[in-house]
Amino acid sequence: MMKIKLMLLSCLTIGQIVCYAQSKSALSLNVGTSIPLNDFASTDRNNELAGYAKTGFSIAVNYDYKLIKSFGIQAMIKLDNNDFSEADIKKLIDSQTGGNWNVNAKNWNSTAFLAGIYYAIPISDKAEFTIRGLAGATNVKEPETSWTTTVNNQNFYINKAEKSAMAFTYLLGIGLKCNIKNNLIFLANADYSDAKAEFNDVVYASNFSTIQPSTSKTKITKANISLGLGYKF
Image (cartoon, rainbow, N blue to C red):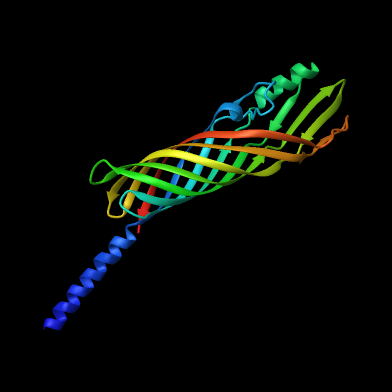
């Protein structure tokens, strides 16, 4: 009888330890806005780093592991999609050529792979305020863009090919994490990220002029505001 009691006590103790260990991890999905800032949002023709980016959307998958009560490590994969301001590019090329151009551009896309640390401050028995700092690499795609116009019934075009570049990036953020039920958690985050991408040998094609491959640079600075759901295990 005593052995059975000891076995039951041991099983309960092991179960508690496993549950405690498992609760250290969390996997979450966040969805929100991607807001371009500074040079990335600039439409200034005199700014060589201007990105002509507009507000878009962001999706992030996060994995957290709490090392001790307040500190933990985090890994993130984040995808951002930002519209390209075709109207502002049209104003620029129309003013430079005196023509009436049609502009068609794809969106800015970036995929970031980040890792770092976070600090959690409990604000109730079910919620905590978090501060995080992450760093890593991001793959940025400069949009494919085409310009077309018609003069004296003759069509003219310029096409710029899509170009990708890898860049170092960092992210600083704050957040709120709340336990909803059992292992389900709700998250709200506000993040700031920055990267400087250089696109080499950007290829142009035209039916009226020869344009040599060029190099362009853009500072990819963004604010992300997102909500999400996660699972602790």
